[in-house]
Image 1 (cartoon, rainbow, N blue to C red):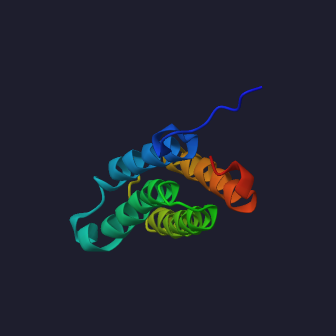
Image 2 (cartoon, helix red, strand yellow; image 1 turned 90 degrees about the vertical axis):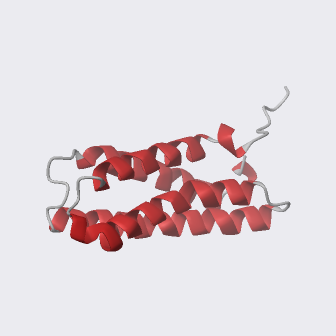
Length: 124
């Protein structure tokens, strides 16, 4: 049986879900107060963008060790974003936004990254 090979990071489900998460974070933060422009808005967007960016960069590396390192960076950016989302909730920012969307996407991406970093054979 021939194994399906992934030729591009764009074929990785984790990258696709991380891209969906970026869009959701931009949607969430666009209605934050303007005084958060250089605070939480900037930090959350950078952390969200960092996740698929590091997955892509790592996938283009030549070794599994390098790829694994970038997956770990993506995972830690997810933890940073998770904290920032919690801060947003506690400050009642984005009160009209359904946080279950970003929570669900982030949880899914984090579970996939956790599995990938603990099982190098499935890096894709």
